[in-house]
Length: 86
Image (cartoon, rainbow, N blue to C red):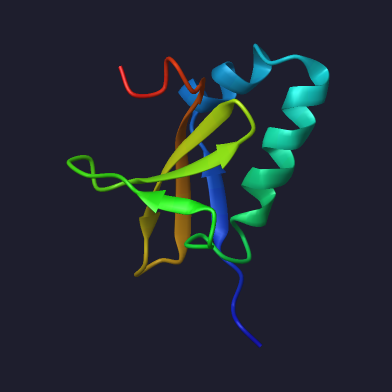
C-alpha cells in the first residue's frame, strides 16, 4: 500500500479559504484532502516558472508545491481563477 502524503495549508491559503462561501469551501477542502492520496493526479497541471502545481476546483485554483523527499504537499494559495496568476 502506498504511503499517504501529508498536506499542509499555509496561513495565507487558510485565509483565502476562510473568505470562500460555505459551499465553495467544502469543495475546495475536499479537493485539498484528495492531495493526500495523489498530489500529481489527472486534474493537476505543473506550473511553468514557479515550480508548483495547480488544481482546478470549479472557478477556483488551488496552488501548491510538492516535497518528494518528505512526502509533503504545501498549499500556498486558493484563489478565483481570474486572480490566481497575478
